Length: 19
Image 1 (cartoon, one colour):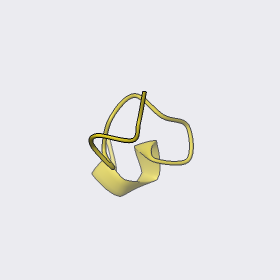
Image 2 (cartoon, rainbow, N blue to C red):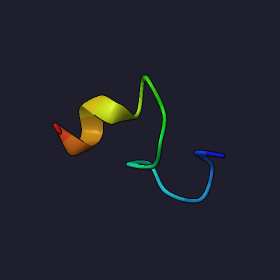
Image 3 (tube, rainbow, N blue to C red):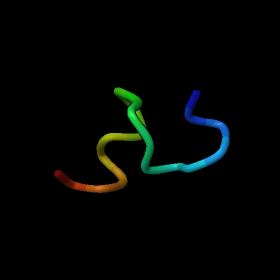
Image 4 (cartoon, rainbow, N blue to C red):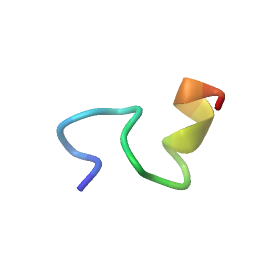
């Protein structure tokens, strides 16, 4: 469910948030 937000709850997208 990381299609909506690039900084959602994703492993590869987690880097985007940097949190």
